[in-house]
Image 1: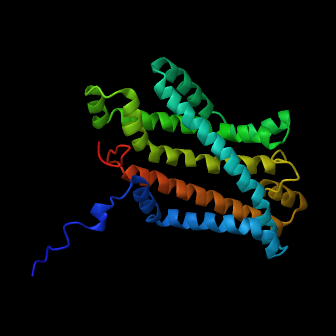
Image 2: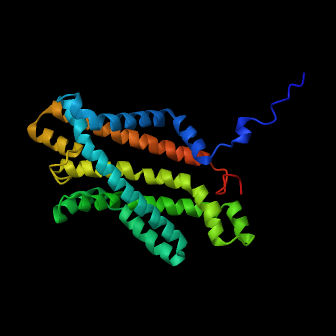
Image 3: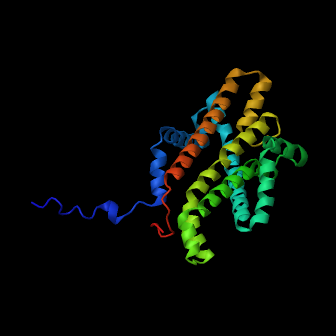
Length: 273
């Protein structure tokens, strides 16, 4: 009997694993990242339904998380977009622009940017239109620096040098080589804007300079519990905030590890260049 019959072509060879699917598999294989994902999914389900669960300290703390998590998503998306655009522009515009843009990013990254939210709230009000750009500022310089570093590292790779030496047009290099290989590490860098925005808003809320009083948040709940001297009311939002920040960082670490593990150069078509 021919043992090799039917084994020449397997589903894996017929349907090669995409870089994003491989990164997702590597992400969930990390225990801390898997637990972080479960925590985030549980919070996203429980926070909107908290008013239906009761009116105890935990339920009130869960309800307060709606404003914090929504703001973290808004500020994080703004910060990620600004940081990615910043780093890409610095890499694409030439050495002179790169020195200026990255010098600004390095100077801003050395400042206590967590104070940006309370300063913005004190100077211009506590509306989301003021606080969201301030939250974006806490993350954008760091993401810009990581973006520039990732793109520069890719530009030094042999397959890109070979494409440039072969006379491949810059637009095709960008579309078929640079973007597909940079997408995963840049997505991991962009993720870091979420915990930064959440921590910044919570810090501002604890000072009484966060989201408006009509918008519930963990920072405001912590401030109210401190003023009332109520340990039970303090424990629940503090625990949920710490758990959310841990989960976001755990998933971010998993994303970076997944991106670092998938170093085989790929083109836009999914194969090797």
